Length: 93
Image (tube, rainbow, N blue to C red):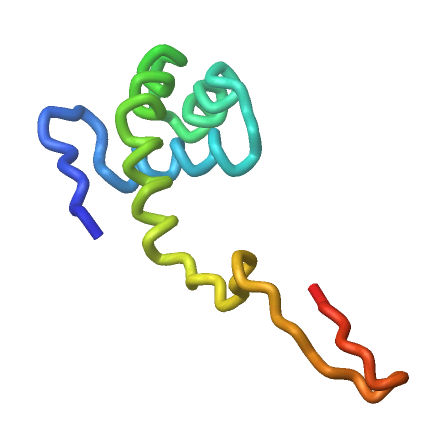
């Protein structure tokens, strides 16, 4: 997993990660996230939240895809089974 650099940002990486997670997980608007931050005492504009999502969102998604377990089902190969029903050959998907 590639590390994400938060250098040059005013807020801590935990705040940035949490707000991006809120926006992406719960499909909130940028202004909703801005209001949630204001309730916690952090003054961040909705435009800042948008910039964070544009900058860090694809990196988060890429890292999460790498951690996702691989599928064991092979959709390209069709498996054939011989069933004892009238001694016929059937293809099961």
